[in-house]
Length: 323
Image 1 (tube, one colour):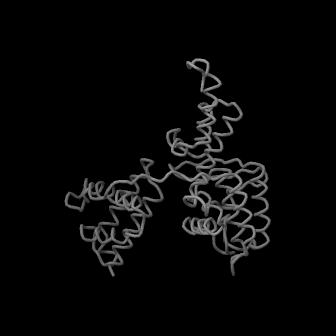
Image 2 (tube, one colour):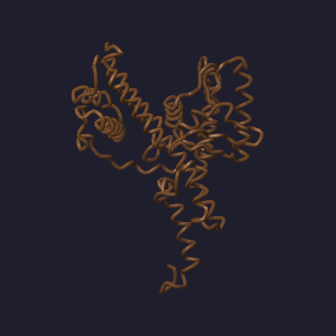
Image 3 (cartoon, rainbow, N blue to C red):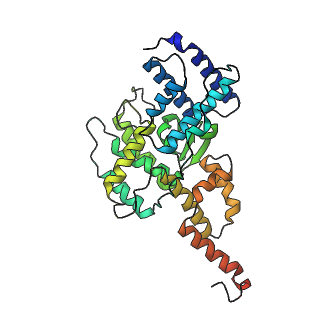
């Protein structure tokens, strides 16, 4: 076991790096999580500092993670080491090419409204586990918030009671990705779901409890990001709704479904989609429209609506008609 003194230089560099990232507005919870996880590994393994041997052994600990996760985490450590090299010319710096490259992410699996209704019915019929009286209700509300409000998994998991305005149907999303906070108005149906959950939570969680998290399965504990993701992944697989499809949607695909549904509504209502996109970007907590377009990749339903609009507007300009 390594003593704190052995990692003193590493710790000092880590704190300087995190402070500089905060000052530049570039720090993220994930960066800090990965680097502190690396630090904990070095301490457990008895290493005095990061070097080629300890870095290689740490990366072997990630072999069960997805390939892109391994690349991302290795790159985060590379950025830290590159920053450190500016003041410590002999400190370890990994070879950037050795970290690998991203593999293409799979396209999101479409999620239809009827599938969401069936999933909510399935969750509602589940019996809460021992000591987890709110497990089914919390998972149901998480699906509703991600599908109807486009919340990220982490945003849903981090919601606290003080972030909820149930009377007006508004959520306060604090310091999320890109260090952006925002208000997220809810639809009438989502607001009813929220109020229903809060009534159940109030009946189960005593006011004296120190648990301030909105989504919780146990009286004294809220969901972590990993815990909420795993819980939703399990019910999505067990529901059998996507058994005949190529694969079960990822939990993050609910956010994709929200963005695509917004686009479909605009086309069906005859709105100017280009002028509406900045509103969608702001609602989803994006820095710019460029980030929002990630969620609007090729979707047959949206393409068909866009094609119909083009045919109606410009079909007479094409020789032989729009067909």
